[in-house]
Image 1: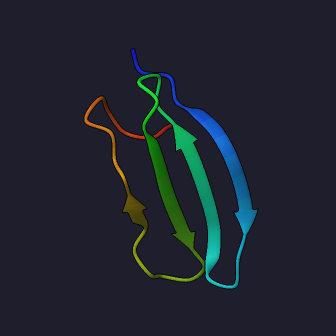
Image 2: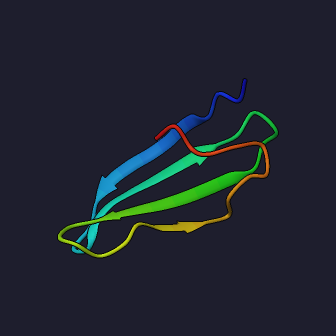
Length: 52
């Protein structure tokens, strides 16, 4: 099972940005926007979804 580690989480003018690191070392950024905009992800790891 893949356990991602939350590196940072902070509020921006667009929503909440969460940086996580996979056990393989790869970083992933998720923007969870305010309102109805879709979630934005950059750098997804092939090992599975973020648990942020």
